[in-house]
Image 1 (cartoon, rainbow, N blue to C red):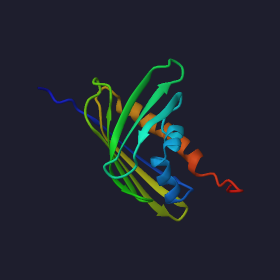
Image 2 (image 1 turned 60 degrees about the vertical axis):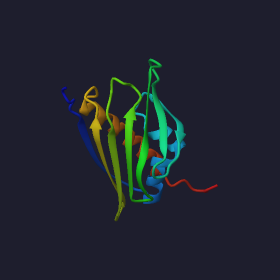
Image 3 (image 1 turned 45 degrees about the horizontal axis):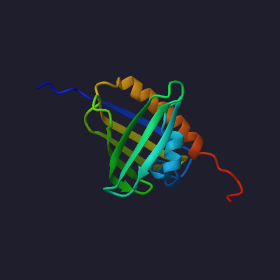
Length: 153
């Protein structure tokens, strides 16, 4: 039996925001549906229980074609404002295996340093496509977490 190789994507950004706000974007279902889908996709969170051992499921739908793919995972580690570790898998049997996403947050002088390590990407997904998708997602994340909107209510 041949073992399929998998890919890893590493990303690093600095956001002008707080660790708490950035952390919340990874566990709030409305926030996830807004920023996680790459350009041209709609996101929907079907279920989420953001606690260690809790699960989530969501889907991305291609706005142009209507084709959708679903995936979900288990929260392995949740340290508010610091670290999130999620074990994910696609529902499609053609994309087997478990992926591990580790999100690390660190306060820096101008905001928060974000490091993402996404391991175990199925062979069916070119690593550079996954990297491109993450870049688009993080651009949308920036638009969500950085604005300071006056009024507060």
